[in-house]
Length: 397
Image 1 (cartoon, one colour):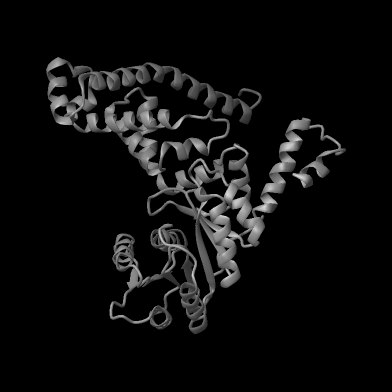
Image 2 (tube, rainbow, N blue to C red):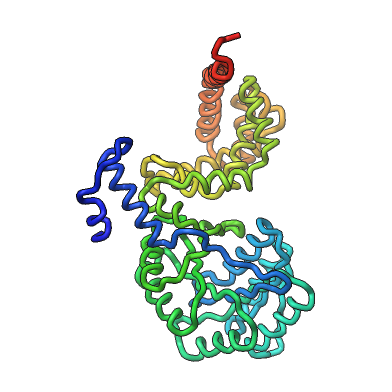
């Protein structure tokens, strides 16, 4: 705050910015610098596997994050990944990691013979090197609190194999506790980066600011949901936007490009503009939206969106889920021509979906309202096309 104050007072106001806008710019730039401006990504080795050791306390979601990281490297960076189940303290962790590995179709090294974790890590490294894997991710054991045996085990792994990245997972919602954990870990075993989970919640990034300031360790990845694909590279400029309530449009665009079926979207858009929009199209739109994650996550990325309470968000999510159940309980003919859904058909749909008559009426009323707005939307689109043509040919010829 002192740095912002010293920069703001007496500074000449730019002609294109109001004093308020210029202050926000100064705060934004300071936040970005504090969060570690620039590229924070992992640097991959060429010719040998890049070894990443995941560390953290028990119960923070370390095993799940190891799977998310493997999925990120495989899908977005086309890397050949080997996971190593090195958490022998919690037997369920081995099964959990194997299940995650199978779901994303990556290999997982497992040893259930009672071998010590450092030797399991060494065997996994030898396999990764001999079989030409690009990345080895080691899921280490956690504890309920930081203790000497835990640190000794992690230090031993770092001694016997060349660990390139030691990533600490911290919970963004835990506030000051996350700062204490990160500081203590960094004193005992030098960290190269942080992974922050639950950055899609109401905690916009206060813990991220504190940890970065206290440890100097860069934040490399952000967990933004519970699904296996809900891990993304950490961008300090975008996090500064989120903290200031300015949204994160770039991440939203990247999500849309990666997860949305472009052909299906174009087909639905064409039908919508031609007035052919039916309940099949509505179902397709809802399914595409679900791929982007929770509604709160999507709205949080859009600048200027008003604050919506959790109660309102839960209601909207329930409504959308009910709409999907109702449409799935209809016949193909009813989806194409919702106007034929009268009393007898509604009774059958009620039995099929387990919802009330009122909820079916609500869906049909919403659909009718959308249908009435389509001609207006088509007119706007046509005017936009005309404007584009005139801009390209100012003479009008």
